[in-house]
Amino acid sequence: MPQWKPRVPLPYSAEDLERVVSDALRVLQEIGLECPHREVARRLAEWPGAAYERGRVTFAPDPLREHVSEKRARLAGFPQEDDTHFTLGGCWAALYYCDPLTQDVRPAASQEAAQMARLWDARGLHGIVPVVPGDVTPALVTLTAERLALENSRFLGGSLPVADAEEVRFLTDMNLAAGRRYQLLEHVGISPLRLDAGALEVALLFQHNPDLRVTLGGFMPIAGATAPLDPRSALVQAVAESIGFDVLCSVLGFPDGLGLGLYPFDFRYGAIVFGSAEWCLYHALSLQMTEHLTGRPVRHGGFRSTGKRPDPQATLERAASALWQALLGVRHFGAVGQLSTDEVFSPQQAVLDREILGYVERVVRGIDLGPPEVDPVELIGAGVREGSFLGVMDTVTRFRDFYHFPDIFRHWTVRGWRTAGQPSILTEAWTRAQEEITSSRFHLADDQARAVKNLYAKACAYLQGRPSTAREEARK
Image (cartoon, rainbow, N blue to C red):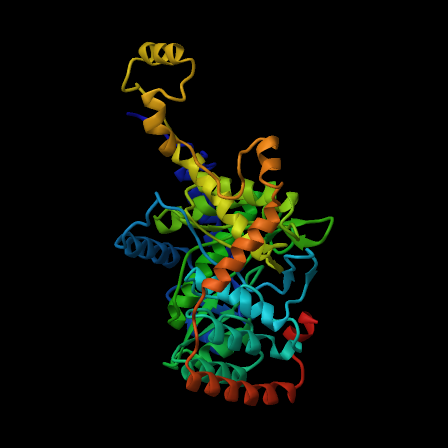
Protein backbone atom coordinates (compact mmCIF):
# COMPACT_ATOMS: atom_id res chain seq x y z
CA MET A 1 0.00 0.00 0.00
CA PRO A 2 1.63 3.32 -1.04
CA GLN A 3 2.27 5.81 1.74
CA TRP A 4 2.62 9.56 1.55
CA LYS A 5 5.19 11.09 3.88
CA PRO A 6 5.29 14.88 3.51
CA ARG A 7 8.63 16.57 2.82
CA VAL A 8 9.85 20.09 2.08
CA PRO A 9 11.62 20.53 -1.28
CA LEU A 10 15.12 21.96 -0.88
CA PRO A 11 16.11 25.15 -2.71
CA TYR A 12 19.39 24.35 -4.46
CA SER A 13 20.42 21.96 -7.22
CA ALA A 14 23.71 20.06 -6.93
CA GLU A 15 25.23 22.55 -9.37
CA ASP A 16 24.03 25.48 -7.25
CA LEU A 17 25.59 23.93 -4.15
CA GLU A 18 28.91 23.43 -5.89
CA ARG A 19 28.93 27.06 -6.99
CA VAL A 20 28.39 28.12 -3.37
CA VAL A 21 31.31 25.91 -2.32
CA SER A 22 33.49 27.42 -5.06
CA ASP A 23 32.72 30.91 -3.82
CA ALA A 24 33.46 29.83 -0.25
CA LEU A 25 36.85 28.53 -1.34
CA ARG A 26 37.53 31.89 -2.99
CA VAL A 27 36.75 33.55 0.34
CA LEU A 28 39.32 31.37 2.08
CA GLN A 29 41.83 32.05 -0.69
CA GLU A 30 41.35 35.82 -1.00
CA ILE A 31 40.27 36.80 2.53
CA GLY A 32 41.22 33.88 4.76
CA LEU A 33 40.97 33.50 8.54
CA GLU A 34 42.27 36.11 10.94
CA CYS A 35 44.47 34.25 13.42
CA PRO A 36 46.13 36.27 16.20
CA HIS A 37 47.55 33.12 17.83
CA ARG A 38 51.05 32.88 16.34
CA GLU A 39 51.63 29.16 17.04
CA VAL A 40 48.27 28.18 15.54
CA ALA A 41 48.91 30.44 12.54
CA ARG A 42 52.30 28.80 12.01
CA ARG A 43 50.78 25.31 12.11
CA LEU A 44 47.97 26.29 9.74
CA ALA A 45 50.47 27.84 7.33
CA GLU A 46 52.22 24.46 7.09
CA TRP A 47 49.03 22.90 5.70
CA PRO A 48 49.26 22.26 1.91
CA GLY A 49 48.47 25.42 -0.04
CA ALA A 50 48.16 27.62 3.07
CA ALA A 51 49.99 30.87 3.81
CA TYR A 52 50.15 33.32 6.71
CA GLU A 53 50.52 37.03 6.01
CA ARG A 54 49.48 40.19 7.88
CA GLY A 55 47.65 38.25 10.57
CA ARG A 56 45.50 36.12 8.21
CA VAL A 57 45.81 32.54 7.01
CA THR A 58 44.75 31.92 3.42
CA PHE A 59 44.20 28.60 1.65
CA ALA A 60 44.51 27.41 -1.94
CA PRO A 61 41.22 25.95 -3.29
CA ASP A 62 42.44 22.56 -4.57
CA PRO A 63 43.73 21.20 -1.22
CA LEU A 64 40.49 22.38 0.40
CA ARG A 65 38.40 20.52 -2.16
CA GLU A 66 40.48 17.43 -1.57
CA HIS A 67 40.03 17.81 2.18
CA VAL A 68 36.23 18.01 1.86
CA SER A 69 36.15 15.03 -0.53
CA GLU A 70 38.22 12.94 1.87
CA LYS A 71 35.96 13.89 4.77
CA ARG A 72 32.86 12.97 2.77
CA ALA A 73 34.35 9.60 1.82
CA ARG A 74 35.31 8.89 5.44
CA LEU A 75 31.83 9.75 6.73
CA ALA A 76 30.28 7.49 4.10
CA GLY A 77 31.73 4.52 6.00
CA PHE A 78 29.64 5.22 9.09
CA PRO A 79 26.10 3.78 9.43
CA GLN A 80 23.33 6.13 8.48
CA GLU A 81 21.25 7.47 11.37
CA ASP A 82 17.73 6.17 11.83
CA ASP A 83 15.08 8.35 10.18
CA THR A 84 12.02 6.66 11.67
CA HIS A 85 12.31 7.42 15.40
CA PHE A 86 11.99 10.86 16.98
CA THR A 87 13.86 11.65 20.19
CA LEU A 88 14.31 14.47 22.69
CA GLY A 89 17.69 15.66 23.97
CA GLY A 90 18.86 18.33 26.41
CA CYS A 91 19.63 22.03 25.97
CA TRP A 92 22.27 24.68 26.54
CA ALA A 93 22.66 26.04 30.08
CA ALA A 94 20.19 28.91 30.49
CA LEU A 95 20.97 32.02 32.52
CA TYR A 96 17.38 32.40 33.76
CA TYR A 97 14.64 30.17 35.13
CA CYS A 98 10.93 30.51 34.38
CA ASP A 99 9.25 29.89 37.74
CA PRO A 100 6.50 27.27 37.17
CA LEU A 101 4.25 28.77 39.88
CA THR A 102 4.52 32.48 39.07
CA GLN A 103 5.88 32.48 35.50
CA ASP A 104 8.45 35.00 36.70
CA VAL A 105 11.66 34.87 34.65
CA ARG A 106 14.55 35.23 37.09
CA PRO A 107 17.92 33.73 38.02
CA ALA A 108 17.61 30.21 39.42
CA ALA A 109 18.46 29.42 43.02
CA SER A 110 21.04 26.66 43.42
CA GLN A 111 18.33 24.32 44.74
CA GLU A 112 16.24 24.94 41.62
CA ALA A 113 19.27 24.38 39.37
CA ALA A 114 19.85 21.09 41.20
CA GLN A 115 16.21 20.08 40.66
CA MET A 116 16.48 20.78 36.93
CA ALA A 117 19.65 18.66 36.79
CA ARG A 118 17.60 15.86 38.33
CA LEU A 119 14.91 16.37 35.69
CA TRP A 120 17.56 15.78 33.01
CA ASP A 121 18.99 12.87 35.03
CA ALA A 122 15.55 11.24 35.09
CA ARG A 123 15.59 11.38 31.29
CA GLY A 124 19.08 9.83 31.17
CA LEU A 125 20.57 12.83 29.39
CA HIS A 126 24.26 13.64 28.95
CA GLY A 127 25.87 17.03 28.47
CA ILE A 128 25.26 20.51 29.80
CA VAL A 129 23.11 21.42 32.82
CA PRO A 130 19.75 22.94 31.80
CA VAL A 131 20.11 26.09 33.93
CA VAL A 132 22.97 27.64 35.89
CA PRO A 133 22.67 28.82 39.49
CA GLY A 134 22.00 32.54 39.76
CA ASP A 135 22.52 32.96 43.49
CA VAL A 136 26.34 32.95 43.32
CA THR A 137 28.75 35.58 42.06
CA PRO A 138 29.51 35.51 38.31
CA ALA A 139 32.99 34.15 39.00
CA LEU A 140 31.49 31.03 40.63
CA VAL A 141 28.71 30.21 38.14
CA THR A 142 30.56 27.56 36.11
CA LEU A 143 32.18 26.02 39.18
CA THR A 144 28.89 25.80 41.12
CA ALA A 145 27.00 24.46 38.12
CA GLU A 146 29.60 21.69 37.83
CA ARG A 147 29.27 20.77 41.51
CA LEU A 148 25.48 20.60 41.19
CA ALA A 149 25.79 18.43 38.08
CA LEU A 150 28.12 15.99 39.84
CA GLU A 151 25.92 15.81 42.94
CA ASN A 152 22.55 15.46 41.16
CA SER A 153 23.09 13.56 37.92
CA ARG A 154 24.91 10.63 36.40
CA PHE A 155 26.03 12.19 33.14
CA LEU A 156 25.69 15.99 33.21
CA GLY A 157 28.48 18.55 33.39
CA GLY A 158 31.17 20.37 31.48
CA SER A 159 31.24 22.73 28.50
CA LEU A 160 30.46 25.99 30.33
CA PRO A 161 32.76 29.04 29.99
CA VAL A 162 35.89 29.01 32.16
CA ALA A 163 37.93 31.96 33.35
CA ASP A 164 41.43 30.56 33.14
CA ALA A 165 43.57 27.43 33.19
CA GLU A 166 43.48 27.12 36.98
CA GLU A 167 39.69 26.89 36.96
CA VAL A 168 39.94 24.13 34.37
CA ARG A 169 42.26 22.22 36.72
CA PHE A 170 39.82 22.54 39.62
CA LEU A 171 36.91 21.39 37.42
CA THR A 172 38.96 18.45 36.20
CA ASP A 173 39.86 17.41 39.75
CA MET A 174 36.23 17.65 40.88
CA ASN A 175 35.21 15.30 38.07
CA LEU A 176 38.01 12.87 38.91
CA ALA A 177 36.87 12.85 42.54
CA ALA A 178 33.39 11.87 41.33
CA GLY A 179 34.77 9.19 39.02
CA ARG A 180 34.15 11.15 35.83
CA ARG A 181 36.00 12.97 33.07
CA TYR A 182 35.63 16.69 32.56
CA GLN A 183 34.50 18.11 29.22
CA LEU A 184 36.17 21.37 28.20
CA LEU A 185 34.60 23.28 25.30
CA GLU A 186 36.38 26.31 23.88
CA HIS A 187 34.54 28.42 21.29
CA VAL A 188 37.28 29.53 18.92
CA GLY A 189 35.28 30.81 15.93
CA ILE A 190 34.20 34.45 15.81
CA SER A 191 32.27 35.55 12.73
CA PRO A 192 33.25 36.96 10.38
CA LEU A 193 36.30 34.74 9.73
CA ARG A 194 38.26 35.30 12.95
CA LEU A 195 39.79 32.91 15.49
CA ASP A 196 39.90 33.56 19.23
CA ALA A 197 43.49 33.45 20.45
CA GLY A 198 42.60 33.12 24.14
CA ALA A 199 40.27 30.17 23.60
CA LEU A 200 42.85 28.46 21.39
CA GLU A 201 45.51 28.92 24.06
CA VAL A 202 43.41 27.22 26.75
CA ALA A 203 42.39 24.40 24.42
CA LEU A 204 46.00 23.68 23.42
CA LEU A 205 47.15 23.79 27.03
CA PHE A 206 44.88 20.87 27.99
CA GLN A 207 44.64 19.05 24.67
CA HIS A 208 46.78 16.06 25.67
CA ASN A 209 45.71 15.82 29.30
CA PRO A 210 44.10 12.36 29.66
CA ASP A 211 41.93 13.49 32.57
CA LEU A 212 39.66 15.65 30.42
CA ARG A 213 38.29 15.85 26.89
CA VAL A 214 38.76 19.04 24.88
CA THR A 215 36.60 20.07 21.93
CA LEU A 216 36.44 23.28 19.91
CA GLY A 217 33.33 25.26 19.03
CA GLY A 218 33.03 26.85 15.61
CA PHE A 219 31.34 29.86 14.04
CA MET A 220 27.79 31.25 14.34
CA PRO A 221 27.30 33.64 11.41
CA ILE A 222 24.34 35.99 11.94
CA ALA A 223 22.91 37.36 8.70
CA GLY A 224 22.99 41.14 8.62
CA ALA A 225 25.24 41.42 11.69
CA THR A 226 28.27 39.12 11.48
CA ALA A 227 27.50 37.85 7.97
CA PRO A 228 25.86 39.36 4.88
CA LEU A 229 22.09 39.71 4.89
CA ASP A 230 21.93 38.37 1.34
CA PRO A 231 21.06 34.67 1.87
CA ARG A 232 23.42 33.22 -0.71
CA SER A 233 26.35 35.41 0.35
CA ALA A 234 25.65 34.56 3.99
CA LEU A 235 25.70 30.87 3.08
CA VAL A 236 29.01 31.33 1.24
CA GLN A 237 30.53 32.81 4.39
CA ALA A 238 29.07 30.04 6.56
CA VAL A 239 30.58 27.40 4.26
CA ALA A 240 33.96 29.16 4.25
CA GLU A 241 33.95 29.33 8.05
CA SER A 242 32.87 25.69 8.34
CA ILE A 243 35.58 24.39 6.02
CA GLY A 244 38.19 26.63 7.63
CA PHE A 245 37.17 25.42 11.09
CA ASP A 246 37.33 21.80 9.97
CA VAL A 247 40.85 22.30 8.63
CA LEU A 248 41.82 24.00 11.90
CA CYS A 249 40.57 21.02 13.93
CA SER A 250 42.34 18.60 11.60
CA VAL A 251 45.65 20.47 11.80
CA LEU A 252 45.52 20.82 15.59
CA GLY A 253 44.26 17.30 16.19
CA PHE A 254 40.84 18.09 17.71
CA PRO A 255 37.52 16.37 16.90
CA ASP A 256 36.30 17.99 13.71
CA GLY A 257 33.08 18.47 11.83
CA LEU A 258 31.67 20.15 8.73
CA GLY A 259 28.29 21.17 10.09
CA LEU A 260 27.21 24.79 9.75
CA GLY A 261 24.49 27.14 10.87
CA LEU A 262 23.10 30.43 9.66
CA TYR A 263 21.03 32.68 11.89
CA PRO A 264 18.87 35.78 11.32
CA PHE A 265 19.23 39.06 13.18
CA ASP A 266 16.38 41.23 14.45
CA PHE A 267 17.11 44.84 13.55
CA ARG A 268 14.36 46.15 15.81
CA TYR A 269 15.68 44.49 18.97
CA GLY A 270 19.34 44.00 18.06
CA ALA A 271 19.52 40.29 18.80
CA ILE A 272 19.98 36.89 17.18
CA VAL A 273 16.65 35.20 16.44
CA PHE A 274 15.70 31.54 16.88
CA GLY A 275 12.45 30.10 15.57
CA SER A 276 11.27 32.95 13.34
CA ALA A 277 10.06 32.50 9.77
CA GLU A 278 13.45 33.75 8.54
CA TRP A 279 15.21 31.27 10.82
CA CYS A 280 13.32 28.44 9.15
CA LEU A 281 14.30 29.64 5.69
CA TYR A 282 17.97 30.13 6.55
CA HIS A 283 18.01 26.76 8.30
CA ALA A 284 16.88 24.97 5.15
CA LEU A 285 19.95 26.35 3.39
CA SER A 286 22.18 25.20 6.26
CA LEU A 287 20.78 21.66 6.31
CA GLN A 288 21.02 21.20 2.56
CA MET A 289 24.59 22.50 2.45
CA THR A 290 25.68 20.36 5.42
CA GLU A 291 24.35 17.27 3.68
CA HIS A 292 26.15 18.31 0.49
CA LEU A 293 29.47 18.75 2.31
CA THR A 294 29.24 15.58 4.39
CA GLY A 295 27.21 13.27 2.16
CA ARG A 296 24.92 12.55 5.13
CA PRO A 297 21.43 13.85 5.94
CA VAL A 298 21.24 16.01 9.06
CA ARG A 299 19.19 14.29 11.77
CA HIS A 300 19.93 16.62 14.70
CA GLY A 301 18.05 19.87 15.29
CA GLY A 302 16.34 21.71 18.13
CA PHE A 303 13.28 23.49 19.42
CA ARG A 304 13.58 27.17 18.59
CA SER A 305 11.84 30.23 20.00
CA THR A 306 12.44 33.71 21.34
CA GLY A 307 9.38 33.57 23.61
CA LYS A 308 10.31 34.12 27.26
CA ARG A 309 7.69 31.85 28.84
CA PRO A 310 5.72 28.76 27.74
CA ASP A 311 3.14 31.03 26.13
CA PRO A 312 1.44 31.44 22.71
CA GLN A 313 4.56 32.95 21.10
CA ALA A 314 6.77 30.08 22.26
CA THR A 315 4.19 27.52 21.16
CA LEU A 316 3.90 29.01 17.68
CA GLU A 317 7.65 29.31 17.10
CA ARG A 318 8.56 25.93 18.58
CA ALA A 319 5.84 23.96 16.82
CA ALA A 320 6.36 25.64 13.45
CA SER A 321 10.17 25.41 13.49
CA ALA A 322 10.15 21.82 14.80
CA LEU A 323 7.70 20.69 12.12
CA TRP A 324 9.75 22.52 9.48
CA GLN A 325 12.94 20.77 10.59
CA ALA A 326 11.23 17.39 10.69
CA LEU A 327 9.98 17.86 7.14
CA LEU A 328 13.64 18.55 6.22
CA GLY A 329 14.74 15.26 7.80
CA VAL A 330 15.61 16.15 11.42
CA ARG A 331 14.72 13.44 13.95
CA HIS A 332 16.59 14.28 17.17
CA PHE A 333 15.61 17.54 18.87
CA GLY A 334 17.67 19.41 21.44
CA ALA A 335 17.09 22.82 23.09
CA VAL A 336 14.30 21.14 25.06
CA GLY A 337 12.70 23.54 27.55
CA GLN A 338 14.96 26.33 26.28
CA LEU A 339 13.35 29.72 25.64
CA SER A 340 14.41 33.23 24.59
CA THR A 341 16.94 31.75 22.14
CA ASP A 342 18.98 30.12 24.95
CA GLU A 343 18.53 32.47 27.92
CA VAL A 344 15.61 30.89 29.80
CA PHE A 345 14.82 27.35 30.97
CA SER A 346 11.28 26.22 31.74
CA PRO A 347 10.56 22.72 33.12
CA GLN A 348 6.98 23.11 31.93
CA GLN A 349 8.21 23.79 28.40
CA ALA A 350 10.46 20.73 28.67
CA VAL A 351 7.29 18.65 29.17
CA LEU A 352 5.29 20.48 26.51
CA ASP A 353 8.07 19.95 23.97
CA ARG A 354 7.29 16.23 24.19
CA GLU A 355 3.71 17.06 23.20
CA ILE A 356 4.89 19.16 20.27
CA LEU A 357 7.21 16.39 19.10
CA GLY A 358 4.37 13.86 19.18
CA TYR A 359 2.34 16.10 16.88
CA VAL A 360 5.32 16.61 14.56
CA GLU A 361 6.08 12.90 14.41
CA ARG A 362 2.49 12.09 13.46
CA VAL A 363 2.53 14.54 10.56
CA VAL A 364 5.83 13.22 9.23
CA ARG A 365 4.69 9.60 9.52
CA GLY A 366 2.12 10.39 6.81
CA ILE A 367 -0.88 8.37 5.68
CA ASP A 368 -1.64 5.38 3.48
CA LEU A 369 -3.15 6.49 0.20
CA GLY A 370 -4.52 3.17 -1.05
CA PRO A 371 -5.72 1.25 -2.82
CA PRO A 372 -7.64 0.15 0.29
CA GLU A 373 -7.74 -3.49 1.32
CA VAL A 374 -11.51 -3.48 1.03
CA ASP A 375 -13.86 -2.11 -1.59
CA PRO A 376 -14.73 1.49 -0.60
CA VAL A 377 -18.32 0.98 -1.74
CA GLU A 378 -18.60 -2.04 0.54
CA LEU A 379 -16.99 -0.15 3.44
CA ILE A 380 -19.27 2.87 3.03
CA GLY A 381 -22.26 0.55 2.81
CA ALA A 382 -21.31 -1.08 6.11
CA GLY A 383 -21.23 2.34 7.78
CA VAL A 384 -24.61 3.26 6.35
CA ARG A 385 -26.12 0.02 7.68
CA GLU A 386 -24.59 0.61 11.15
CA GLY A 387 -25.61 4.25 11.24
CA SER A 388 -21.95 5.31 11.80
CA PHE A 389 -18.46 4.00 11.26
CA LEU A 390 -17.52 3.76 14.94
CA GLY A 391 -18.23 0.03 15.12
CA VAL A 392 -17.16 -0.91 11.59
CA MET A 393 -14.28 -3.40 11.77
CA ASP A 394 -11.99 -1.25 9.62
CA THR A 395 -12.29 1.55 12.19
CA VAL A 396 -11.97 -0.77 15.20
CA THR A 397 -8.77 -2.39 13.95
CA ARG A 398 -7.04 0.73 12.61
CA PHE A 399 -7.90 3.79 14.69
CA ARG A 400 -5.27 3.24 17.42
CA ASP A 401 -2.46 3.16 14.87
CA PHE A 402 -3.89 5.94 12.74
CA TYR A 403 -4.56 8.60 15.37
CA HIS A 404 -2.08 10.36 17.65
CA PHE A 405 -3.47 10.78 21.18
CA PRO A 406 -1.73 13.67 22.99
CA ASP A 407 -1.00 13.27 26.66
CA ILE A 408 -1.65 16.87 27.73
CA PHE A 409 -2.92 18.64 24.60
CA ARG A 410 -6.21 16.71 24.79
CA HIS A 411 -8.90 16.99 22.17
CA TRP A 412 -11.92 17.08 24.47
CA THR A 413 -14.96 19.32 24.11
CA VAL A 414 -15.75 22.21 26.43
CA ARG A 415 -18.18 19.93 28.28
CA GLY A 416 -15.57 17.24 28.77
CA TRP A 417 -12.99 19.80 29.84
CA ARG A 418 -15.36 21.30 32.41
CA THR A 419 -16.30 17.86 33.71
CA ALA A 420 -12.60 17.16 34.27
CA GLY A 421 -12.28 20.32 36.37
CA GLN A 422 -10.96 22.65 33.64
CA PRO A 423 -7.36 21.50 34.06
CA SER A 424 -4.62 23.98 33.17
CA ILE A 425 -2.03 22.79 30.66
CA LEU A 426 0.79 24.56 32.51
CA THR A 427 -0.29 23.07 35.85
CA GLU A 428 -0.32 19.59 34.33
CA ALA A 429 3.06 20.15 32.73
CA TRP A 430 4.60 21.20 36.07
CA THR A 431 3.04 18.15 37.78
CA ARG A 432 4.61 15.87 35.17
CA ALA A 433 7.98 17.61 35.54
CA GLN A 434 7.87 17.18 39.32
CA GLU A 435 7.10 13.48 38.90
CA GLU A 436 10.15 13.13 36.65
CA ILE A 437 12.36 15.01 39.10
CA THR A 438 11.26 12.75 41.94
CA SER A 439 12.04 9.65 39.85
CA SER A 440 15.74 10.56 39.75
CA ARG A 441 17.35 8.38 42.43
CA PHE A 442 20.98 9.29 41.79
CA HIS A 443 23.19 9.71 44.86
CA LEU A 444 26.87 10.53 44.72
CA ALA A 445 28.82 8.28 47.08
CA ASP A 446 29.58 9.98 50.41
CA ASP A 447 33.36 9.87 50.02
CA GLN A 448 33.10 11.28 46.49
CA ALA A 449 30.70 14.00 47.64
CA ARG A 450 33.09 15.07 50.40
CA ALA A 451 36.01 15.20 47.97
CA VAL A 452 34.01 17.27 45.47
CA LYS A 453 32.94 19.75 48.18
CA ASN A 454 36.49 20.14 49.46
CA LEU A 455 37.78 20.86 45.97
CA TYR A 456 34.86 23.21 45.37
CA ALA A 457 35.74 25.20 48.49
CA LYS A 458 39.37 25.54 47.39
CA ALA A 459 38.32 26.61 43.90
CA CYS A 460 35.91 29.19 45.32
CA ALA A 461 38.70 30.71 47.38
CA TYR A 462 40.89 30.95 44.31
CA LEU A 463 38.22 32.42 42.00
CA GLN A 464 36.95 34.94 44.53
CA GLY A 465 40.46 36.27 45.01
CA ARG A 466 41.09 36.71 41.29
CA PRO A 467 40.14 39.82 39.26
CA SER A 468 36.95 39.51 37.22
CA THR A 469 37.21 38.49 33.58
CA ALA A 470 35.31 39.99 30.65
CA ARG A 471 33.06 36.90 30.58
CA GLU A 472 32.12 37.35 34.24
CA GLU A 473 31.43 41.04 33.74
CA ALA A 474 29.12 40.16 30.85
CA ARG A 475 27.17 37.78 33.12
CA LYS A 476 26.42 40.69 35.46
